[in-house]
Image (cartoon, rainbow, N blue to C red; front, side, top):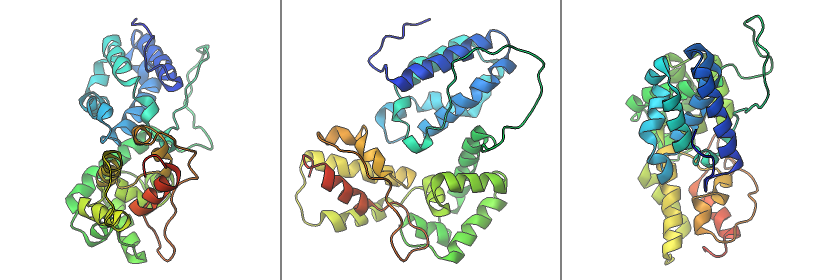
Length: 292
């Protein structure tokens, strides 16, 4: 086994190491024994895939996609699992906090009679939810010109009719069950936010929103980089959590960040709104005095 000593020895990295070592040991028994660990690994990979604008994650995107596609899991090997551990352990701390719902365990089980059961009080199949997101994302790519999605990508307020239409499209897409849609909507804090996290925001719309805040100010290199990161995140993933501004890579441009106050809420008078760029920059300006 490779040494654990690394510059990326965060708590998240160490827990990921444990998960991967458990999966490697299970793979020496049978592919079926890996299944509980596979689900957790796929969920982590899905969360990383949703942040392609971070260069370190983008560099490992081929490996991340191979984890999600599932072909390697048919004949999983300890060597492949070790490759995943080595390459991703330094990235897991970059996962947005709202996505960090993976439960790591550190106890020994005594194997008895195997009986299938259902966990009460949990969202059924968190990994299925990750797969549902990916299927829904692929489906919606063919409907970017649809009026409701066009309004969403332009950052315009949605009407009840728009929301009903988005819900209908997702239900009829075959991506998953209505229960999965409901769970995904709840996780994203709204249907509009969920859909925009799949289709992204129009880059020009993001720039237009930011231009209202920036105005005719002359920005230095740090500020330009900071704004560009927000535009990139909005273009690819549709939303940015305020909490993310206080973590790498955003915090790298802000020497003295303080604690976030929480996510930006929908603007008054709209049924649903994404976290708007100028609100994010206002939050950044207030707390990141060295940047602004």
